[in-house]
Image 1: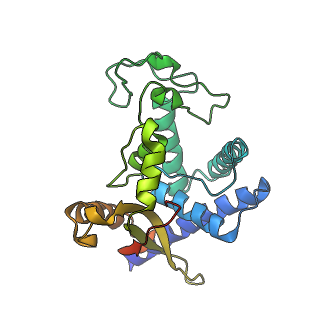
Image 2: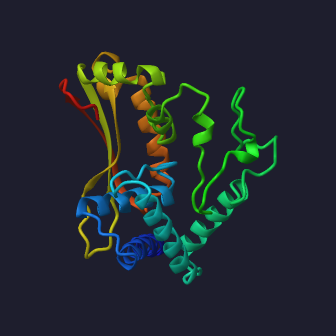
Image 3: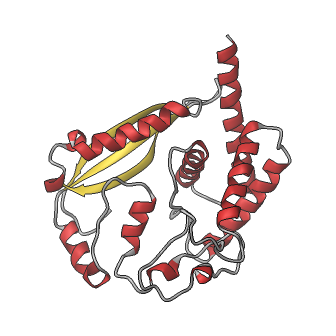
Length: 262
């Protein structure tokens, strides 16, 4: 009985966090489509519960307006959560923010050459303390890390987003890579979750993340060794935060050759 009360309390706290997010969106007048708002809620909840290490918000407009709205949203959410610091979830989020602030101070990278959090680039020209150049203390710009490399942004994004398979091609072969992928059969791997909600709210299966793999490299679908390992890793995370998610599942679908690569 005591565990049920604790579980219900945790679910209520997560719902409160989503309410804070929704209220903040309304206050800054960021009008998102219903699907985009749901996507943002899932992404933020995935970050807070540790299901994902990072997310990509590419469904809310274009830069620099998107950056400004995200900064305003984060500031307002932080302010509203600080007003309720007694809540466990709020305390946890604030502690995470403090940890990030220690490793990524507003004035530049912390001067600690032995830190495991630092980023070393071979023959990179910018000094480590020059890696961050931003007009806002909420934004950390690592674009200079890629200036003297052939690594493309999609490759970096795929790695940061935690995909088990990423496309690696040089900047000079971007057009060739896009063409080749658009002419191949692909498997789309989709990880879906179902949120735990309060009794008066219906929860539905929603996408947590998805990525594509050429059919020839994923013939066994979900039975591929790397796919099973990736799902097992996510399931371990899911076990630690069942108060947030009711279910987790992997689906593999086929995508015929087309002009646009997902």
